[in-house]
Amino acid sequence: MAGEAAELLRQARRQSALPMRVVAARAGVPVSTVSRVESGRVDPTVGMLHRLVAATGQRLILGTTPDDAAPPPETVGEVSARWRRSAARGPADWACLRSLATYLADHPERVDAAVRRPPPPSGSAMLDDVLAGVAGELAAQAGLPRPTWTRSRSRTGAGRGGV
Image (cartoon, rainbow, N blue to C red):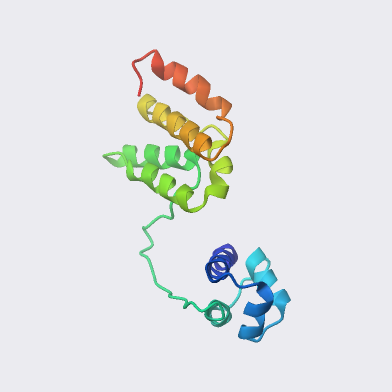
C-alpha cells in the first residue's frame, strides 16, 4: 500500500505543479513527511493521505474491488503466466495483454523492467511470438534497445508463418 500511496501523492503533486514545501505547509506537516510518503518509506493513514492530496487541490476517492479482480500485469512474464493459467480453465485471457499495454502507457518509466526478461513459455507459440513483438515495440516506443530475447523468438515464429 505504501507504493500506491506514494504514486497517488506524486501524481497529485505533479498535476498541481506544487513543490513539496507548499504541500507540506498546506497539510500542516513537515516537508519530510511528504518526502517519506512520496518515496514509499512511509505508509500513511487514509486520513493523512487525504490531507496531503487535499493540499494539492485535489480530493482522494477510495473504492473497493472484488477479490477476484487481479491488478494489471506489470511484465510480459506475468501476461504469459496468466494466459497459461486461464487457458487451463477454458478460453484464454487475451485481455491481460491489453491490460499490460494500458499499464505501461500510464507508467512509461516501467517499460524496461516489463520487457527486459523473457517470459516463461505460455504453452502457445502464437502468444509467445505476440509477446516478443509487443515487447520489441514497447521498447522501441520508449527509446530502449529491443530486448535480445525477442530476436530469437521472432525468428522461431517466422519459420511457422508466425504472427
